Each structure stands twice: as structure tokens, then as C-alpha cells.
Length: 91
Image (cartoon, rainbow, N blue to C red; front, side, top):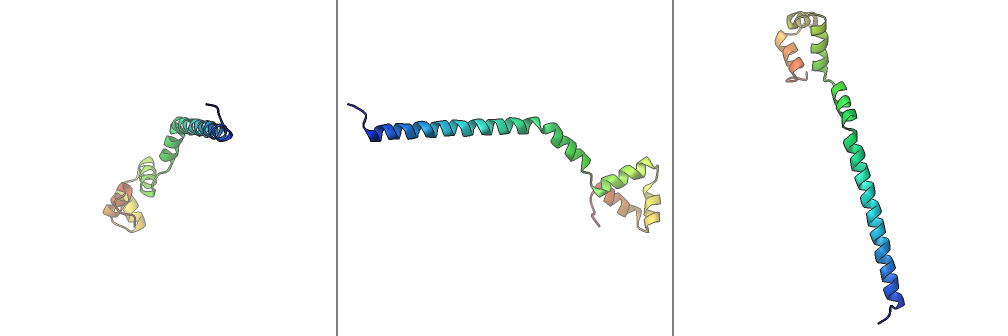
């Protein structure tokens, strides 16, 4: 039983497909490893993205201002400032 041309062609195609699949698998593994190693960068970006309410509260406490003072200065209720800072209300 010998190999004919079709058998050799089929064998070559199977080997080529196996090599391509192996290469793609390697690329996926490398991409996943890179993503996992980037965890610190993603965490830093998440920490720098503050909501407006978080920024308001941080600035207010840093300047030793009360919610009442901020509310009176803006002409809103203290409850509104509290809701902004807690993220309950976006208005």
C-alpha cells in the first residue's frame, strides 16, 4: 500500500492546519499572559476615574468644609449634596 498524490496532499494540509492551529494557540496564550500582567495598570486606571460625587467629597473634606456649607454655597439642600457624594442622585 503506497501513498498516492491525494494522500500526500491531504497529509500536507493536515500538517499545515496543525501548525497554524498551534501558532494561533500560542498567540492566544501570549495575549492572555499579557492581559493578566496588565492588572496593575487596569487597577490604576480604575482608581483615577472618580465620579463627580467622589471628587466633590474629597475636595470638600480636604478643605474641611461641611455638607451644609457646600449646600448653602450652591443654593441646594444638604441632602442633595449627600446624595451627590454617595452617587444616589446624578442631578
